[in-house]
Image 1 (cartoon, one colour):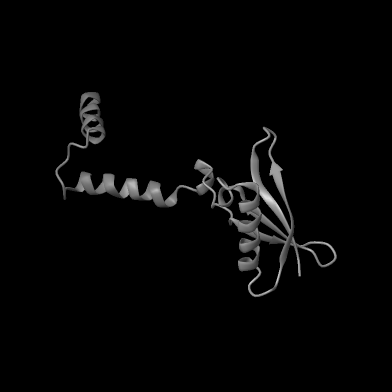
Image 2 (cartoon, helix red, strand yellow):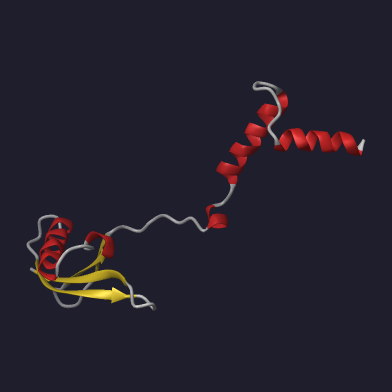
Length: 120
């Protein structure tokens, strides 16, 4: 009896059943159940936030969070021009000019993104 279970387990692990058989279909159903029924938190898989987000600002200032990947590889002047284009596109028709662009650093002093301050 114990040898029989060992044989079944060995065939299950080595995927030794012919396609279309009941054990094969059971293995496929278990794999699909694992894929679709496992909660997202188990693997810490979270959706990626947007690259550009408008944040409420003070007294007529419009503030945008811009992901660092959008501005990587540009010189300082090109970065300002690109950021201004991004906030104009994001503002959807509002005429905004970039007032200043400030990098945001994490605890390891790596740039995580930029805060772009615009005014009409």
